[in-house]
Picture (cartoon, rainbow over the protein chains, first blue to last red):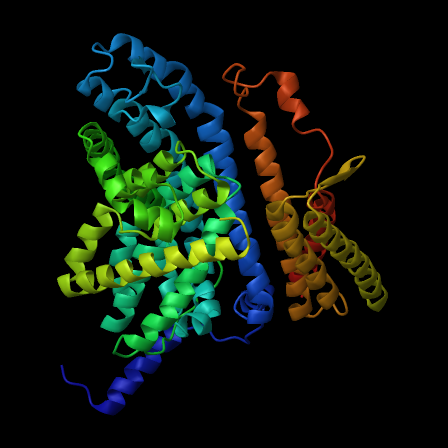
Amino acid sequence: MKLSPDERWNLIDSIADQVVTYGKYRHTLKDAIGELTVKPMTGIPIAIAVLYGFWSVFGSFAGTLCTDGFFVKLFDGYWLPWLQVVFPGEGSWLYSILIDAGGMTNGEFILSDNCFEAFGVLTSGLFVAIGVVLPAIVIFYLMLTLLEDIGYMPRLAVLIDTVLHRIGLHGYAIVPTILSLGCNVPAVTATRILETRKQRFIMMTLLAIFIPCGAQLGIMEEVIPDLIGYVLLYLVIGYFIFGFILNKIVPGRSPEILIDVPPYQKPMMANVRRKLWMRVSSFFKVAVPFVLLGCVVVNVLYLAGFIQWLGDILAPVFVGWFGVPKETAGPLVAAFLRKDLAVAQLSVIEMTQYQMLSAVVLVSIYFPCVATFAMMLKEGWKELIGSVAVLAVVVFLYGGIIHLIGKLIGVA
Amino acid sequence: MAEKNNFAMICIAILGLVTVAFGLADILVSAVGDGTGLSILEIPGDMFRGGWGGFIVLFAGLFYLSGCKNVAEVHNASKVAMGSVLIWIMAGTDIFAMITESIPGGEDGPWFNSLSGFLGTYAPPYAPAIFLLPFSLVVVYYILKQERTK
């Protein structure tokens, strides 16, 4: 049936009469609150409060309740001692890889007293994956999902749009940035919401270098709770400085965006449950194998003397340029497999507070973990090579600058 | 009606002033570095709860003060409601932290806390935001009631 333009308009009018209700628009309290969250003067304090709530709940649930409250006791008090007794061949290669790498004192093999030091696949590997990372990831994604479903995330995107334009991105870059605080892997995929190659390259590079994942945050909360604020401060500063530089040197466009901001609404629990399950399960499929594999590889490299050799070779760079002990070479190798594992390893190396701070920042900005690396490769090998080149320069420069700052303020 | 609004304005202004005072106290105490307690009131001295948290309490007070003048007007009401939301974030996280501390039995103790240990965690002193919480609830109740009657 072919309709003339008049008939078509008549049809539109009759449908509209049936489905549209006309009334006087009244500015409601919900609308006014929505406006407050996007205006910089009021929106920034609110965003700071939301971040505070996010971080506080994260620390209380993952750190105080789950890890310190139950998992440390379970793994250090029962699981580790039980495995140390029942597993045969104390001091052998297999024992060191699976249960406890321990230490030698006067030619005698000494067992570790906790899962951070044991470094076996079945002890430290499982403790990190289940006892530290699982609660951190669950609470992180739960809060992120709630914020998304309430309708706060698009408002945060509008609020931060101007700032992110300074580094060649736009407001929606907040999505991969915050996702990355959970896991870098889905965040790399989320960079596809950015329009141009330039924006995607900048975002991918910045998140691979400067954004610690939830697992790493969980471990940092556990082993360096007093320093975590400073570590994050260094990373945030680096994110903006190097973002600004990349925006200047990477060719391409950084277009504006139009965001449809939905009204605030009550989250639907079924949606929250589904999203949480999807994110946590996919994280675990990717993360757990790498944590366990990381333990095996690092232990084998230690036992084969490779880490010692690498530490000796890189000692001038580590000690002279970065100002950290040469023993941090081991964790840096482990960081390629899992950064959370590397931070756990750093916690048992003897060093000053500032050296620990520098070492954790180095682990964070050093090569992305292998899962992220694989994801970046999927997005394009040219981008990956570019990101790695930027990363090498950033690690060298930023590591040196942090050491220099420590020297200037007299703590390094 | 005007009398009622004037009364509401005075109450919210007082709440705003008290909140600003608590926020400033939080920031100052955390800048000095040592937490301080006055009987049932505890001003946290760490940079996280005292510094960052104090900044949020301070802004909650400023939201109250900037919206108190004509709270019947929707934009002012939204500022006052937002001040209350900031207080809820602070008090809510403090209460959540207490809950998470009260459940486990401690490093060398049993798996779960004893009843006395559990209840003891909820004993005073409390942070300022917890004292402000009931007042912030009353304010929001008043605003929502007004919104419904429009």
